[in-house]
Length: 306
Image 1 (cartoon, rainbow, N blue to C red):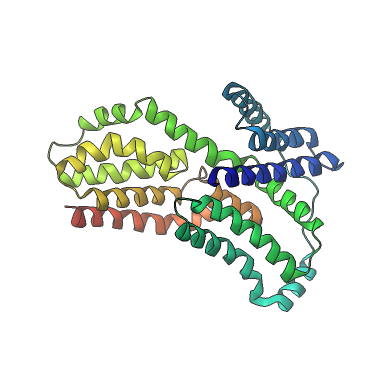
Image 2 (image 1 turned 90 degrees about the vertical axis):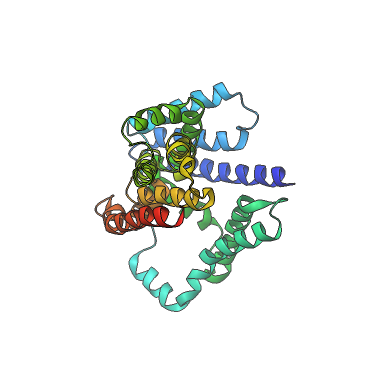
C-alpha cells in the first residue's frame, strides 16, 4: 500500500512539473520558454516514469537538465501574482484563516506518521497533507481550481532549477559514502587530532558536519560520511554515548544548513518567493544564530555525551 501511494504522489508531482512546462511553452513573453519548458518537462517525466526507466536514461536526462540550468536556460516567465491591492484586501477578509492550509500539511503528515508508522510513514502523510491543503485553500479563499496550476507553475518557475538540489545532493551523499570518502577524511583528520583528546574529537566532528553540510546542502547526506570518518574513530570510540553524540552531530550539521545556498529549500526558495533584492538575504539573517547554535552544540556534546 505504501509503495502504491508513494508512486501516486510521485506521479502527481510529475504532473505539476509538466503543467509548469506547458505554461512556460505557451508564454510568448518568456525569455527562454523552450529551455524552461524542456527542463520542467524532463523533470516531470522522470517523476512519473523514473521507476521503470533504465538508470542510464535517467542519468542522461539529468545531465541535460544540468546543462540547461548551467546555460541559464531555466528562467522565470511573465506569470504574475495577484496585484498588491487585491492581496491586501483578501488578507483583511480572510485573516488568520490563511494559515490553516499551511498548518494542515504538517499536522496531517505527523498524524499519519504516528498512526501508521510502518504501513504509510511520514512521506505519504506529507503528500496527503499537501492534497488536503489544496482543498482547504480552495474552500477558504473561494478561488477557482484553475488557479492551482497557474500559481503552482509561477512559484516553481520562480524557484527555478534550485528545486532539484535536494534530490541530487542526497544522491551525492550516498555516492560519497559508497566511494569511501569517510575513510579518506578519517585518515586526514587522524594526523591532526591528538590521540585521546576528546574535545578535539568533538570539535572536529561538529566542524566536519557543519562544513560538509554546507557543501552538500543536506545534513542527512553529510551524516553518514562524517560519522564514519570522524564520529566513529574520534568521538564514539572514546566512550561517547552514541545516541547523544549522534543526534547532536546531526543537528550541528544543520547549523551549516543555515549558512549555505546549497540548502535551496531552506534558504533560496524563501528568498525567491519573497522576491528579496538579495537572494542570500535569508542566509545573512541566519548566520549569527547559526554560529551561536554551533558553539552550543560543541559544549553540549562535550558535557552530555561523555
